Image 1 (cartoon, one colour):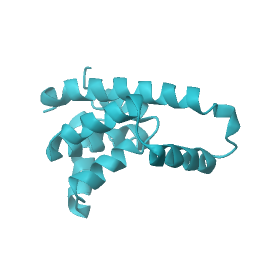
Image 2 (cartoon, helix red, strand yellow):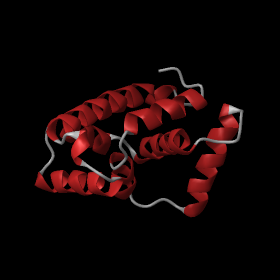
Image 3 (cartoon, one colour):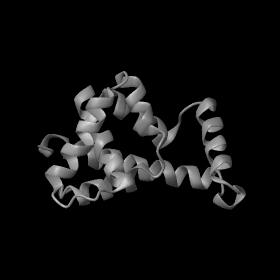
Length: 135
């Protein structure tokens, strides 16, 4: 089921990790007191224009088809939120069903939902581990 997107997940994880490293260098982590301040700084930086790994990640994600974006988003949320299920297929199917039932926004909006997550690579890696996807 996931064989076709393993390469995409690897690339996204690599770019996400680089993005976070670049971000930490540019904005020393100790200058933020709250998560809200961190998000405000990140949004300010995005308004200044995308550069480096952030731009590479943005460009890469926007080249993917909508179904791949949906799968990646489901895996990301599984990694972020966890699951009470044990069976990998049941974990994915339940989360995907919930998304399908609620309805999807446009590809652009769903892609932005993914790009806003930091640390995206950690969420994806945890999701892949829970789903037993070998990267």
